[in-house]
Image (cartoon, rainbow, N blue to C red; front, side, top):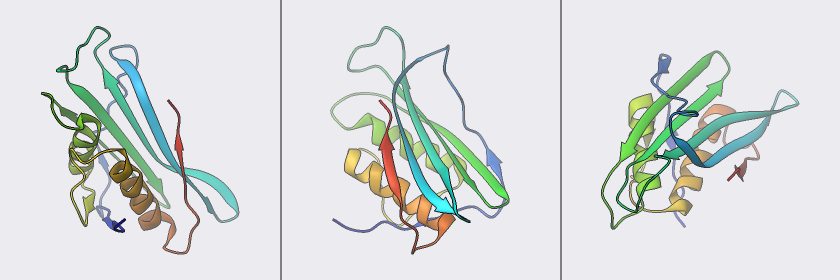
Length: 137
């Protein structure tokens, strides 16, 4: 498994959308670490679909990342079928937030999502930090 690195934008960006109430929350993941002796949730990713959807329905994703003195978020979506739409939607959300990864994750799968969230958390907390990825749904 290759290690992914993340570069975060220097300026705050806020394009993330909380679609709760409008769409069905289908999954959520967080990256948790310890910063200054306190456990922190530094990255949150959520995926949504229409309440009535089939395999070709769009998948929507939002990401939020929090660090010392910055707050970034992004929103994306993926349509069609025949590939991993959750990773494609999250890749679009990361692009929207200004997060640059060392490799593309769109359409690749959940393993790539986990490595990307860990990379973002490491960019926030440092390479030596212990990172826990939590799947909420």
